[in-house]
Length: 73
Image 1 (tube, rainbow, N blue to C red):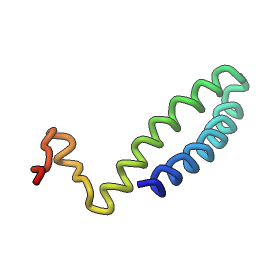
Image 2 (cartoon, rainbow, N blue to C red; image 1 turned 60 degrees about the horizontal axis):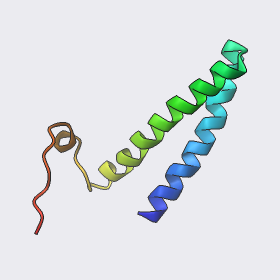
Image 3 (cartoon, rainbow, N blue to C red; image 1 turned 90 degrees about the horizontal axis):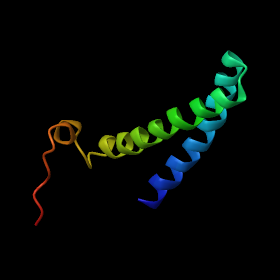
Image 4 (tube, rainbow, N blue to C red; image 1 turned 180 degrees about the vertical axis):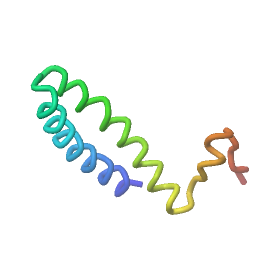
């Protein structure tokens, strides 16, 4: 899981820089671009983490959406 976390943090850093640059180019506002750059990539990083786990078959989207949990034991 450590590698997943490192990849997630790396992806988040890149996304923050790109998100800020694009938002600033569109708005010209440092404050607005900062807000957009912080919120959107943070949400995306969480999605990316679970997306990676789902692709490895560790979690299933349908189970998450319906709040079903795997049996332990």
